[in-house]
Image 1 (cartoon, rainbow, N blue to C red):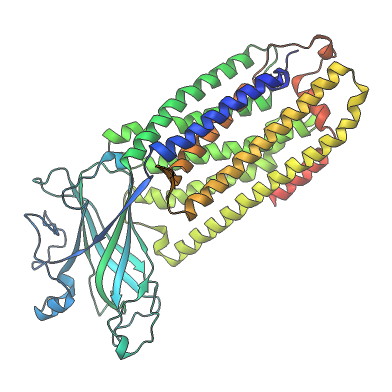
Image 2 (tube, rainbow, N blue to C red; image 1 turned 90 degrees about the vertical axis):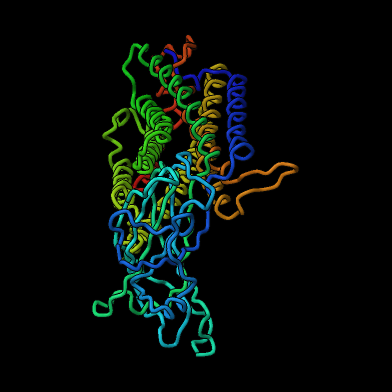
Length: 534
């Protein structure tokens, strides 16, 4: 009976396949590093102080423009407002996105806005502990400089101030600014319009203690972050190329399996499921977001990534288990419920967390789970636990590979008793499984390493006459790497047409060859699985 391609292909051909995959891997990194621009762009804005003399509060079409032919009546600072007896409730902070003589584009995909207050220190008006800022915010859009503004969202939001005054709190230091943390303000999942307008009010109500004890706010600064259009085009082109590539190999893989006289085994099924999840994440549905105002695309993208990573982690569990367990406990997915169950549960928790953030933002783009103390604590706890779990899973994977290598070395004592042809076949099999495990470990390590590099460097490197965009190379390189990994799995584990005649006349199935190598590791794996669950 024929085995898998990885068991029967010659070493020379496997090396050729490996070199081709490495070339594609290098190309995927170069696409992001040398062709694509930086993934995102940050634009800084200083809010203009407009005066609302009729207190419209966004009723009708009365929006306050910071510049242009229909610009609002402005003041320079609050000292001027006091001189003109303008109340705080009549001041509107206006921000036009983008800057003058520019336009937003659907290629920007999303828009994230971060807020920061410039607060001056006053002995008689200091920031109280746990100070909460209440904002009446509105967002409008239009696609022509001549058209009227259309309201997109309107909400009353609260943000907790976290400020520190580094100097001594004395009268001599009055006027110096607090150092305040950045605050999440808004996130829009689609940039379908050319112009956006933000109007922010800070209503004051002494009886209800609204915006009391928040210090003397001088200015409001915003930072708008959006995806670069050039990077979006490179990303879409990469998805468009990879989708048919993985889809074709997936169809070829399943067709080979269905041609076998036996039914598909569990390992073959889960590799096929991994190919489906990779195809699902590859599908370039983002092309439609260029022509349609699909604000749910960010949430949809998170769901697709969650499905793929849950499938990938489950595959590693089943892959190791199918080669480590004896025949009586193999080829049944129910055997792995203790190991796969926590992965499914964790993925479900991720989904709930994402729905609480981006799901709510579909209706209110100003909502942030970080705005409240409870939400911040839950979010931080989730991030810490997720980071710890990821590190533990990686260490568990390293430990399992080490145990497998050590036990394989012990099994080599049985090889001298075999015939020469059979011994060479088993030695080649051991080498190929070692190689595949190392590749799996390298993929996981490269993901972590490149993520850290993308966070700590300045965003680009200068290499001769070229500028290498490290962050873009991280996105395209890691994305291409996992596609090549899934591609290689489906190719190497597809049934082979090559036969070994007398060597397999004993009726061994493809899995029994691997079982011979890994027999005796059942207790090691069960112990490792228990450690992972804990």
